[in-house]
Image (cartoon, rainbow, N blue to C red; front, side, top):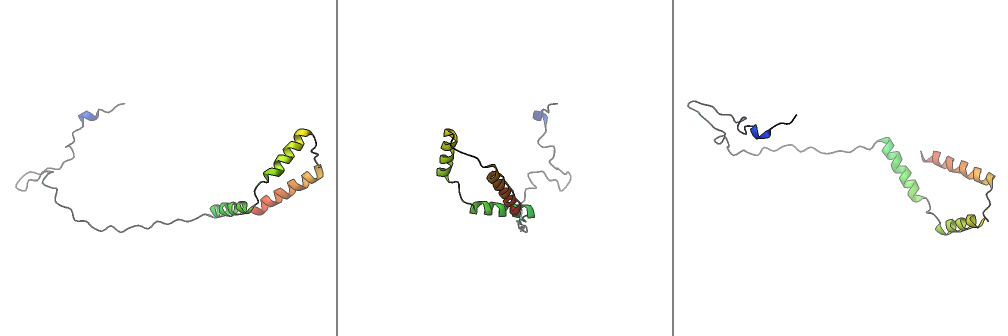
Length: 105
């Protein structure tokens, strides 16, 4: 349902009194004195979860970056069929990685 805003009377909320002390909206515009408003101070509290995330980010920043040369060598070895996978070593590395993830919490 649309509202026709052209029909709204802009003076409908103007207060006018009659009698000896007649005032109109234009007569009521006396200079206002500025009253000091107490300023509110902002505060921030960091949740325990946010602190954990911050700790994880710090630990991740301390981890070594990827050795791109080694990655390229492994990619080439896989492409040429020379790369052999040791399943026991792979399982040990996965378990070690999972333990490191648990330690980050």
